[in-house]
Length: 344
Ligand SMILES: [Zn+2]
Image 1 (cartoon, rainbow, N blue to C red):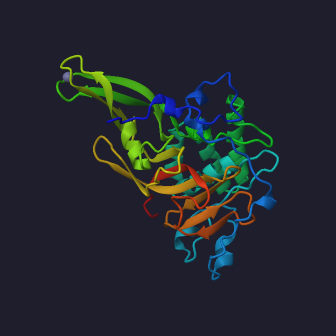
Image 2: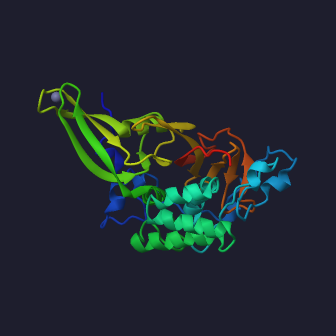
Image 3: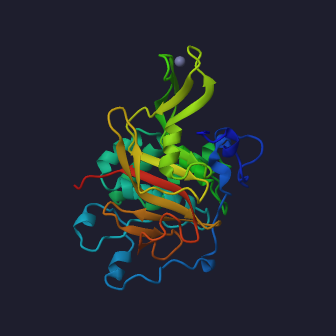
């Protein structure tokens, strides 16, 4: 029974127009390019900014852009305030960043101190992002400035995946960069169940999982197979089957999934095995594409679903769970899970 996808499955099912043939290093292995590079549509073609079925009561209030800090007003208000949503940059198309980072901000704003520590412990980009989020929450900078600072770093390190101008962003490479755990090494343990043979190898830590195809049926299944798999090699000691088990080098609070197939089911909860006990993360957002533009659904900590579109007048409108896993004419490309925040 094959347990993992072959390497070949990962690579370049379709070539991103922003990824040149030569010079592929990090982006190369990715996964990243199984979704064609995407930019944006002219506003006129974009017709779904307001779901027709939404209710009228309190609508106005709810759909107001929470352009400012999400502070603590959110939990106490009867009608939940809409999450803050970044505004699309028409000069330098930004919908990939907007969608992913607005979800991340909603998570961050649950418990800023806590999440700042977590983001800072992941990698330099997330550290910078959390600093920007903090400044934005204090109204010291625009929300988009937090985005643009990180974007500048990304562009400097990989201009092909993260171009400026009217060009698309390789969102799976973005997930790769934001979801890396540069400061933590993971551990891959190979062991045989028949004898005591065991090897341990370190690997680059990460908080993202690639699901390039429908080889596994759901995000949870993809995680499970990423964590534990059998190998083709026989144990040198006894000839038994060798297993490989990956261990996150730290407890995982945030987990991103790169989705390459819309047949992969997006689980609402994610069980992450840990040394002591499994940890449960909750789905907090999904980024979608219609082939030309990225949008997202943000699931706030109260479980309210918001449809977010950085090109729309109302960035966030209240939405339902319906179709959240399928995407309604769109394809889910990234699923974001986070540990549950306790109420403040
Ligand atoms: Zn053995």
